[in-house]
Length: 193
Image (cartoon, rainbow, N blue to C red; front, side, top):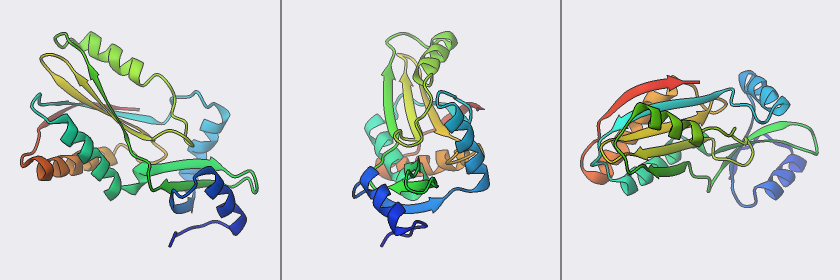
């Protein structure tokens, strides 16, 4: 059963684009329509991209953290969204995809932490815009220095807002705690968009 808000023609087209992956189809909210319109006019824009940087402990098990991020996307399925304009009708649809996982990347930096190097690595990692149809719209990047570790959450505002990020971090810590038997502490550095 697929809860959907699509005609049979639209569903057939979506199934061609995302074969055997569709969990849910919906129309966009007015604010999502506005964000999509700006994206459609300039696909290279980084407008509406949210970032949250936290310092985390070096003893966090990164394989368990990655699994925790996957569990997070099962609880908050909006993290598995894709957006597409249908050729058949011109309608814009939000599609929740069964197999879409948040991107999880580890950048190993063999030097001690400096703010300058951290900012450069974050800028390089987030310099490209997110493709709303093809890319994971929620990404977690771990920047691992020899003496410090940081977690960057990067998402498009079309799927969540800044108020959601603390909820996601809290749920992520709970999942990690259940998998590892202990919680990890994080110190929030910034949220920017």
